[in-house]
Image (cartoon, rainbow, N blue to C red; front, top):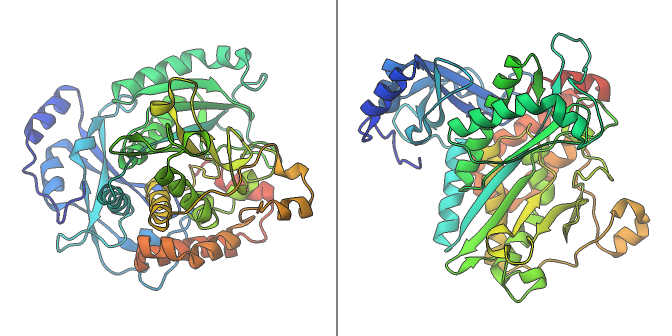
Length: 459
């Protein structure tokens, strides 16, 4: 949206959109926002109230800025507590009928104050600012999230996978074939370009990818994909979980971010003079992301349960390193096959998961990369293989460092990051730290099994 104030209901075509949605059976419109714990919060209005919501917004307490993932209310230096009110304003450009929830439409919301000015800690506005900062530097980015989730049997006290079979196996596809057909059809009906669906490695796990678009759109897509997955799963008698770990000790579910950066003459990760075709600004961007990874971990996978997934030798990206097609590296460079480099080359950040606010992920990664471009950073030597196979001395000699191993360490790294503190602004930076530290303290002594159970159905 990027509006300097609540934009009003003068958008061309709103009356037509309302009439079309009414003809499609829509009665209610859901407006969603994501808090700093990664929980999607919602308000709904009848369809005939959409114009008023677009003009004046719908009330929401700013207390959610410092809610933890289990709805505990904490207070930061600037935000939290019982005071104040915000206005949620739907982005009508993303308004869509929810094909899997008959009678409902959906739009992501931006947060404004009662004076009509943008809320200083609006996460979606933060992502918009970083997209604009990239444009001011002559750069554009394309992004997409990988979506991994687990399907479980409903009603069971413990997690029971909805199907069994070999990882990535045909047996699993047979068990999910009808489900996949409906899910992909519904997503396409909602305007999403599905690229792949396949069974994954973990118990009951599948994966779906959608086409890349601008970073704000990619974050919006992440919400819509997960919303749709949960609804379609329920219709098939299953329960979907995007939590990072359902069974401690096993593989978990990530939300890897794929990102490419483009200048006036094309993809900066391809057709250049550097390693694997990297151009200097593209390499500098990746170097900036690599440098800020410990702090980015707090934003993109800093929930206490995230660290149940972040273990070596699981392709979770726990090492602060990069490599071409190296799945143990936190930053994996994907060059594409010969002839596809310009449209296929991208970088995958593997250490993120669905406990994170996707708007904060895309905004923070852009901010980190843009800092690298400004400072003309260079990537260190790449890695190959699994760093866990090396001794501590060998890793130290090669400059291979482990990313934070718990929520408190990640929060410390975020606090220490001048780049992200400046980009987020003091209010949003402090709110993010408040949430991460509160979660780290409250669950410091929680067993892995209990932590997995507490977070299993929150995302």
